[in-house]
Image (cartoon, rainbow, N blue to C red; front, side, top):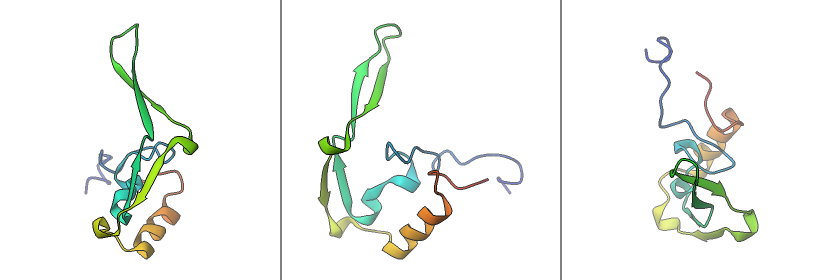
Length: 88
């Protein structure tokens, strides 16, 4: 019904490269990623802005006990949403 009315679900929106949004959260498949983003204050607005760190600086740890999504389901969703979000 929400799709028919053109109301997007904010939880599935995200950015695949930045690893944000519910469809990109690797914790669901048992991977914990640290240092993906850094935060800096914008001197013009005073607001905190996030910036993506280089992949080589990411710290990734497997935490299989935290996996809640089977790998085949994760892979299937990724195949349906190559841009990081499902079409509405």
